[in-house]
Image 1 (cartoon, one colour):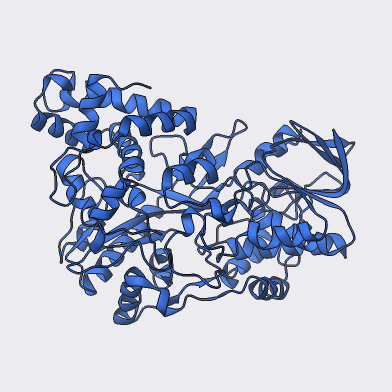
Image 2 (image 1 turned 180 degrees about the vertical axis):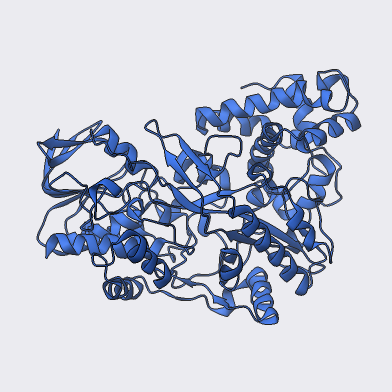
Length: 474
Length: 125
């Protein structure tokens, strides 16, 4: 079966949907192909197992290889990771953009004013606003109090979730359709303007005529593209698709970056209400200069809370029972380390020697902040530390092992495996997002980011994909 | 997969009954076998394989860590729990990671139980 379009977009997450929105506004015909299923808001449930099975890649159990495996979390459904993220909207930091200009020479291609312009537009379209205090819940209130008490810069998280009821279920799919994930925002917009959405279809390869991409092949059909093929399959899947399509290059699949992070749990002598309030409604940026970590709240369902606690047997169950009095804060680290995506899809990632000291400083500070707002104990699930730290013991965290395997790290923001470069020898795509050496194959997802960001990347991913799509139609 | 007696002993020591007044239910009293059918059907191959490996390690390697001969069924309940605790504290990261796998699968079931959620005050919607 063959169907013909002007553009074919592979992937329906933040990048693919943003490009689709722009291209659908023109008079061009458009197909968006998604490997995962379409799942309606009414189908989201308040249980982790069926959610992981339906919405997450590899049921949330995708790990890096090696002695210190790290969980890599990705959505795999219509809307991609926007369905299961916490709706956090942060701009591309100007300091990161400057690094891209100074080190990678791509400033002329991505003028900061242009990034800001499209970011403005996206924020307006997705009704981005600060998390209102009435839906903070106890967990966010505690981090807010900690920021105020310590004089650290921070504030309520800006999110694309108008009408959020604070059910703490962002990561299970928003049950109210409040979060403006792509499957309830940009993708319906594009479909209403004629875009065709194909779900449960994995793209096997890009089809070529010489150096020109003429479409894609799935197991069920051929989708031809008369103008361009856009790849937005994520920093993990995009390199594999490019390899399967016959492309090669020294940098393809390399420079895999992200924000590995972990959680600390504070135990209080009063109810916190971890399952109530916005999932990630408050954040502190004030630790980034010292330790390159961002401190955020995280509401979790009991399943996630239990599995992250240390111990076994009675010790473990006693900690589970602390759920009503627990606060959970997470620390994504702007790691220096890098990894790679292999041709078989295998993942590797190694921390840089500077990363663990930064993480430990951040963890210690987070624990201190918890004590400052009244925690009676802090659980920092690092191998070698006591299961519970008491007040005055936060400094022990700095003596934790200098071994990545001691830390239960999870990585959720992924970048760099098809990075942008002016010089074809230094990257995979050019400043116009076109894959070097091809006429009309574009990569528009976070694979092209030369570095990680230090902040949640959804908006930056959307902004760059939007710029790429705008340039195709103007 | 069907759980054998050694597997059951591992899971029972991992999350035993009467460990806490708030959560007196042990994992094996809560329909975990039924959950496992779903897990076998839905989970990726690698996840299922590593879960089986973790059960094997808990049954046959954990006792050795406390100086006792395997399998774990030869130990009394206290020693079974001590054996798994030793595996969780092992210097070998791979053994600790296998405990994490066991805890993850157990939590996916246990944390979703209505009686558990009620006991810890998680109401959901």
